[in-house]
Amino acid sequence: MANEPARTRMGLVLAASASGTVFEWYDFFIFGSLAAIIARHFFAGAGETQGFIFALLTFAAGFAVRPFGALVFGYFGDRTGRKRTFLVTITIMGLATFAIGLLPDNSTAGVAAAWLLIALRVAQGFAVGGEYGGAAIYVAEHADPKKRGAATGWIQVSATVGLFLALAVILVTRTAMGEDAFAAWGWRVPFLLSMGLLGVSLWIRLRLDESPLFRRMQDEGRLARAPLSEAFLQWKNLKLVLLVLLALLMGQGVVWYTAQFYTQFFLERVVKVEPRMVNLLILTILVASAALHVFFARLSDRVGRKPVMLFGLGLAALTLVPGFRLLTEAANPALAAAASHAPVVVVAPPQECSVQFDPVGRSKFVSSCDIAKSTLAAAGIPYRNEAARAGTTARIRIGAKEISSFDGERLAAPALAAAKTSFETGVRAALRSAGYPPGADSAKIDIVRTLLVLLVFVTGAAALYGPQAAALVELFPTRIRYSALSLPYHIGNGWFGGFLPATAFAIVAATGNIYAGLWYPTIIAAIGFFVTLFFLPETLGRDIAV
Image (cartoon, rainbow, N blue to C red; front, side, top):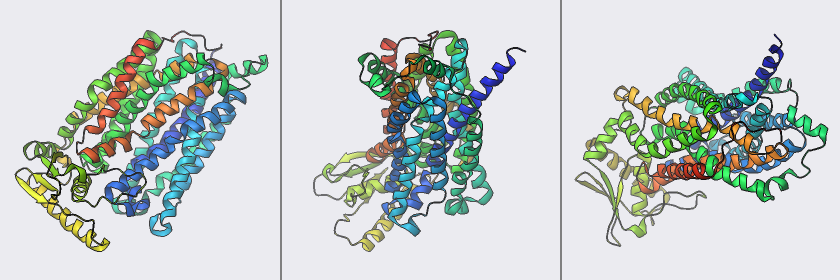
């Protein structure tokens, strides 16, 4: 009975910290999961492919500012306390999410709608910069040292729970009102429902006390006077910051976002699986993912943090590219078969072909090569490139059949739009006759095989992410822990991970190879594996009170 109050208190600590992290990821994943719909409402004038990339870049904008939020809130977390800081972060984040549900779209506010959306995403990302570090540190500084991995593992699980909750709310709303109504206005409902989560999270967090290690430092007068300078201008600390960034956090960002997020983009946008089926597949695998996070976090308390995280990095580096090929064959076997027996080739002068990626919206993509490639990219069709003689018009070869593109440089806007429509109609008809399906047939999806491939991906992500919070807390001294931990986490997770969907999809659109974007996370994971193996120390059993 004597331990009952301590267990109750630890349960409140876990609930409060995890609830905020659930809310954080619920906010972010709603936006990412609805990127295709958001593109139509806020970036309608950019074209289908570019509009989708703009939506992904807006999603990434929230990640771009996270390191700056980490610096600001990390400073206050080390100077004024863990509790007060993450009360502020969750409030900003929640209000910004709710406001997205109220925004006017492009049809009523024009370009201003896109800028308002970006501003709210920036506010979300800035606040999130102080959220994760505060939650992980708060739990670790309360936890039994022998169970620190298991305790902080719940923070990692809560990211998966946030994604699960986001997808569940989207699926229920989408099913209840129908696809047309959901696409028209129902997409706002998940954003508006976030206000309830904010209220619950604030109520729980207001019941908490300050971290015992922070209070002890405060009582002893050991608080850092300039935590940012101490963390990033003293070589002994900066060396650790750079090491964890290269060894763990870059890899964790790309592996986790590939497994838990890019798979959704790939299935829906590239493989053309029906959105509700994608939601069901991802929801199913997230249940296994949550259990795996707990398992690997607990395992790290027995065998060490380093070997578990090495397993995650190695598994990801070895399986991402071949795994996504298997995913295509399982989820859309007709597409895989058509690409094999009737490969698509864009034959064009290389100098006429632009990279199909324009983050500032100034490129027109009206050469015959660009029109051919953008048509195929919008249709989700894999292709390869073949050089043609300079001055010739690009053409698309589908098996033995060829379709000539056209040069839109001198066409007025109405004529260009009409010519594109005619060309796209012809290309899609030729693709259908060659066996390319307009979408994946849900009845022919190999559900078991698809889930097994997804399970491999989330196993690597869970092995890397599950023990990570404990390892990060154990690496940095208490007086600068909030600052030193938060910045590299949000560079690795925010910049390398958050930009992954836009980067990978842009590579796919530029090359025509639907697997080319996967080399980005594969290479980063491989770098992380070798840096962790040779340079990262084991931290299990360290005293974190120093």
